[in-house]
Amino acid sequence: MKVLVLGGGGREAALVWKLHQSPRVSQVFCAPGNAGIAQHAKCVEADLKRPEKLAQLALELGIDLTICGPEVSLVAGAADAFARHRLKFVGPSRAAAQLEGSKVFSKEFMSRHHIPTAMFSVCDSVEAAEDILTNNFHGFPIVIKADGLAAGKGVVIAQDLAEARAAVQMMMVEKKLGEAGSRILLEECLTGHETSFLIFTDGRTIRPLPPARDYKRIFDHDEGPNTGGMGSVSAPGLLDEYLQGKLLRKIAEPTLAALQAEGIVYRGVLYIGLMLTEAGPRVLEYNVRLGDPETQVLLPRLKTDLVDICEAIADGTLDQLNIEWSDEAAVCVVMASGGYPNTYTPDQPISGLKDACQVSGVHVFHAGTSRDDLTGKYLTAGGRVLGVTATGQTVATARERAYTAVSKIQFSGQQFRQDIALE
Ligand code: AMP
Ligand code: GLY
Image (cartoon, rainbow, N blue to C red):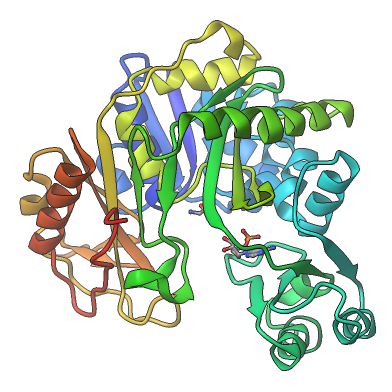
């Protein structure tokens, strides 16, 4: 069969790599893909924000199954457009994608269904926000969030009133995040250990993914600004089994039941971001898709054919599928451009990729690369450039392999964390 992956980053590189291995797949397409993805898929131009065009593309290419990586397409209604054309699609509908597309929707949803989360206030104006802040409604530090999609830049943890006011100004007056900041949330700041819990669901049955952790800050020891993710690790035992059971019963199942109660059939991956507080787990956010770079460490551990999983999700037959994962560990170290997560210079030649791929257990997933037409050399073309991933019997082995591969790769300005999977 012919499959199409929507997106063009490291997560999609891992999806394409996995689908390419399936005996059921004759050809993989990726829209828009990237230079590295082109090793395993035919890359086609696409605007990820135009659902109808994406569905037309799938029709033209004769696609049997489409898997959506990024939230933008889901929030724009890709699942609905594909459904209109009776095309098989993995990813939730526009209504369900509001869980990520609008933080206000998501908080009000949790509140309506008694799903544990931080206390919050919704503010439509600077005056309303000022009122909450001066009355010290949620205490300090306080969390300030833009309602809409803001590519990871929409959350500020303000230590005091001055910082909080500055964040409100930035979002609502200066409109630095565009429309995303026209409504904001003020939230109680939770403390504890942060974790994520990912599930596959067809709207009725839940199949949890193994635990994976990402490293969001740019520098070692979780210092510096937030990024899209500088690395990840997945291994058995990363999350206590008892806790996993609890997250399933207390968070994932009630979430699915709440979606059903609202008449929403959720088909795809639900990524639940959590804070494990002393008072119990609290949902920080929902994402309506696979994580990036969590996918890069999860898929190498997947033993079941990904196509079987995708079909079961799309067809509503997940209850009949047993999903198997290997007991191996996987570690992904992201190599990023100098200056990321702020501005960076693209088009830096990358060397050593072949050597890196020869390290045992290593896969290098391209997140942001292009190819020089003349020399055929790979060039940097994004903030996050490569996800150097390795599997191994233990986290230590996977880690060592990943860093050995990283040491063979070079591009001007490269930066990566040294402490991925260390703690
Ligand atoms: P979000 O996009 O909502 O997950 O927020 C991004 C990051 O901000 C999370 O990964 C947390 O580290 C932090 N965060 C979000 N909400 C809260 C909260 N209520 N209390 C403490 N930290 C938070
Ligand atoms: N790694 C976090 C995310 O994909 O949102």
